[in-house]
Length: 220
Ligand code: ADP
Image (cartoon, rainbow, N blue to C red; front, side, top):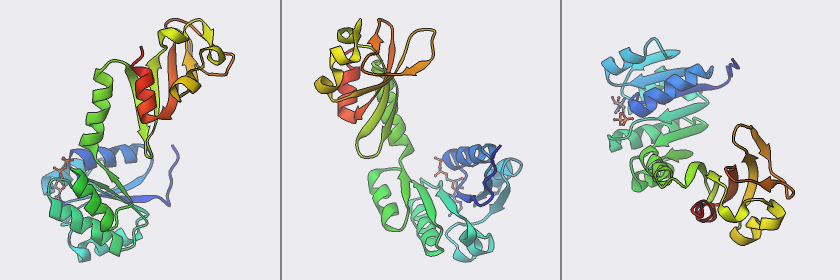
């Protein structure tokens, strides 16, 4: 496995979110330091992470002693304790950590984290909720929503596109979406071109503005 030794990351707060994230980064070859105030939590991760420490992450001196100022990346996994989440994030910014990610429990929390210096904020519950909403409707088989209102969606081919080339069905001008890739049952995905014919049962990968790909996917 690739081992980016210049990529040292500290995960502060090893709850469900921080703990899973830290363990996954280790599996991907990263050097991960996990910090949590709860000794039992730290004990759980002692064998899985590169380094672990019991500390209060709102204490600047502890963070310095643990080498946090030399880290290239930090993730604040504290969510429920808003004060600890905000103080920890702002300390990381003061220490000059170049890439700070933080978890928020709601949009106000997210805004504050950005103000105090987080470079990226994630809202795991919101994002998962939106994701599951898409999946339960059954139209969208899978999707990735990017920032700036852009998404990539896996959906069944709609009736109006069947037995036509993409040029003939004109999906782009009609729905503002682009069919990127097509999969026939039992075959791998292939790139879609204007000459590609869509058949019944095909699965499409479609790119476009979120609302437009949603509209397109709901045709099926
Ligand atoms: P999750 O929902 O992902 O489990 P939580 O917010 O419940 O997230 O868990 C956060 C973790 O962060 C807990 O394990 C808790 O012990 C730890 N934590 C909270 N505050 C601090 C702090 N000031 N210093 C260190 N660890 C903390």
